[in-house]
Image (cartoon, rainbow, N blue to C red; front, side, top):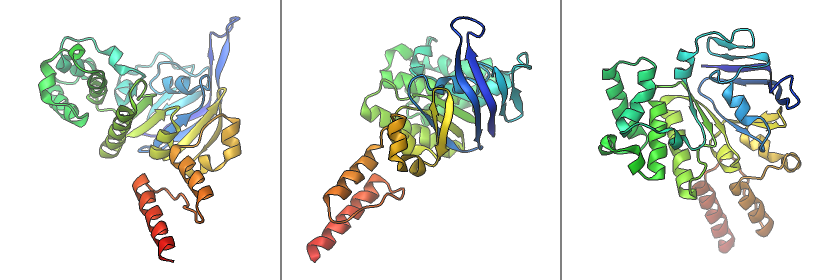
Length: 289
């Protein structure tokens, strides 16, 4: 499902002394099946942009097209129930939204609210609990008996049970330790590939944007100031410094490595493991000379 922002602006508390323009004529196209990362500092407009994706807010001017849906200031009364089933939003700390007495009931709440038949819901629960890496034994437990990481996976399972075509992730690893962050992003990327989702990630972690995204969009004070592939975005050190974004760790490592050794390793999209092999080969060549 393609998504297009056309000259989208948004103003909080318009016509008041507290008026604040959060987005300024944003143009952005996201193709079906893409993995997009949206980055920028606090106040750049990232979360405001995300809230347009299932009609939580409407543009003050311009329009957002999501598949067959058109969201603009003139058609606020349309029924968005089907759109909200197709666009799953994972906000920061989604586990705070758990409320049912059992894990099974919590996962079933979303699809049941969208009118999915009970028999199909039961099938989906079994599917999504496995997809998020949990055991069916926890379905009868209270979500509040689980660990924090398990609770987050249950909350994500509830969103996945609605079978969205678009998955929107707003700082989804917030509050997790480094290992938990790595596991969670690997989970989302696997789901993106297996379900052929359109995935939109808002993050301040440049490592995640660099590792997983097909394309990165940089926002600054409500303006889209750059978009491109991860390699293109992180090639311009001066630009990154001006917008206060850091290089991903893998690029920082290669930069220091190339300054230290009499040979260079050029980044071409390799994994950490592939870079390690390349370094090992280079060092063996030097020893053999």
